Image: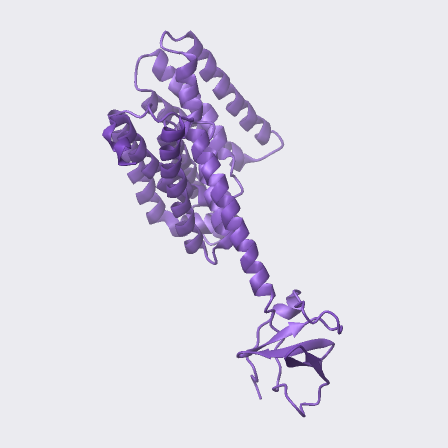
Length: 344
């Protein structure tokens, strides 16, 4: 497996994948919280026009794509903030116009070939040059530093924008910074993942992480881990399978999402199997005044229409009828925890 490191383009691609695996989920978690998961996809459409300008003018496609994507991010944020019935239409026109302009400009460029266009749209492990890598490293460091420094404000604005405004936070500036960070992440990812697929790497690891994590910090850490596995694993897989890197990365991310979803479903079933009963002011037992009903190898006590059974330091709540003792209640009433014998 280590033979892939003998190739310079693979070393570049793997380093780029490391950068993408960290940056994309880190920025994407705030976009997901704001329910703007597809903004990265739209910025990718517009960034293609910047790539085309770079190819047509024989300048750096990465730098022209960066300038175009950042300008589009600013325009998107002001359009979104303004709201109104035409805001969605304006964004759609911007996205479609960007990708159409990019296709046309690449088509008329002497260096514009179908293979070149495909590499930018869907990613190519041979596309990342050493010069690109230096630019991507600098941009990723900017994303990480700004995200870390502003994470409390980004979190507050993403969770409840109106409350953040009422608290005196510069929400418009914070949202604008997040949009620019998203544009930068799109440009960092375009060589390996592709402009049309980068949004998936922002969204899928976060969707998986939020299904199983118990806190925002935990979700962010897990999302970055899944992003790294998807990006690096996808590049390695694409090398040996001779498949496009962008599509392979996204398919691996989807596979991880399925695995995490199965684990999350198992955890929910496990937790439901020990639904805790409501708080009592006494301890159940012989002579407690409630009807005792045998259930397999223990006794349930009928209390306010619910069957409670001692389990460790708490009570589980079983279904009230005599045939449903193997099933545990799952309602909000049953989820309220209590300590066994609390208040007695």
